[in-house]
Image 1 (cartoon, rainbow, N blue to C red):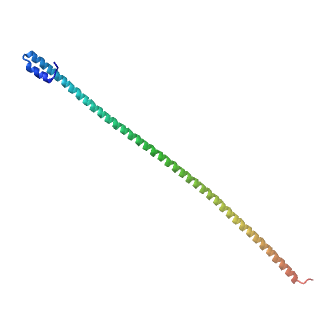
Image 2: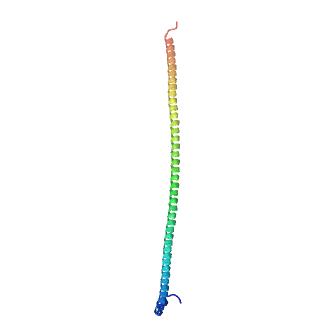
Image 3: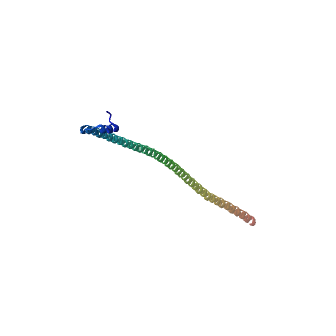
Amino acid sequence: MSLSVGNIYRGSNECTNGAELQRVLGKGLEAVSYIEKAVEAIQKTASAQEKSAIAQEKSAIARANSAIARDQSAIAKEKSAAAKQECAEAETRRDGHVDLANQLGELILTKSADIRKLEEDQVARKAQLKAEGDERAAKIAALRAKIAAEKAQKAVPVS
């Protein structure tokens, strides 16, 4: 006899003595116990499946967070590289400015030296011109003296 609700029900109608009824009720209780265990197992399976689904969702979220972190890391690396490039460019510009400043300083020194040389040359030329002027004046004075002496000689009768 298979254990089913129909058999238990029919069996209880057919039982007339207490021992048979007790045996059939015992089988019914045993069947209820199996059903409760089956329900409990189904609930545990469902709970395990829910936990598995939750774990899978958490895993998917973790993977998404990991991807986001990788993206943020890549962005940070790009920003770092851009900052390094900008720094290198700024250093190059600074070095260029320093070079220009050095060149300008050298040019100023060169031009200052050129100006001092020109000033010295001008002072020397003035001195030379003054000396030449003084020499000419001395020659002119000598010629005038000679002319005056010749005139004086011509004016004095020769004895």
